[in-house]
Image (tube, one colour):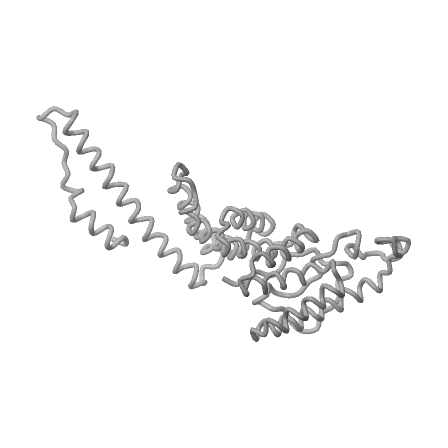
Length: 278
């Protein structure tokens, strides 16, 4: 699924960007990072001239220049990323971080790059840094969840997607990602856990994704698969309960009492399993 537009906290005043955003990398590049002690909250610069950061005098113009330089590197890296030129993209993202070590989008995009290269440890480290710089950086949580998911760390992926949804509740891709992660992680949960409940939660997330983006073919397709799987599970549980009821009836009921089983014969059950839509 596509990655949503970053929900960051732009610096004030936010630098103007040339060109558009990069949907594959998470939408428009914004100054979403920076801790306040370094380059965040550049508002009324006259009030901050006296700041000293890490032993040096704070210069608002220099700070904004660093941000613009880092942004330009990220924009160039995005173009290489689109063309699958991972080495060039990585080199430019390294330069972006060197230009401004507090620019969260550079860590976000480099983490995404590492994830696509299956270097999940490096991906997680960069995404940790992006979130450290801006703990409301919603897209960083979704990309880190992808890294956790692909490393089979399903519980951590669900936690990150839940945080992303808490930050921005209209993100269909976050609900979709959490639904798929819940489903893929079922084998990892202890046997005494409520697996049926977790599958139901997956269905709820899929339903939410479809509600937000009803025209997304992928979401509709996955929802259809879920409904078929859930119907089969319910049919099997129904058969187990019916078998138990028949056993109890033979053990406990007088011979004069019988159960009407005409609606629950084997043929009906097989029809439900083979054609859940019926």
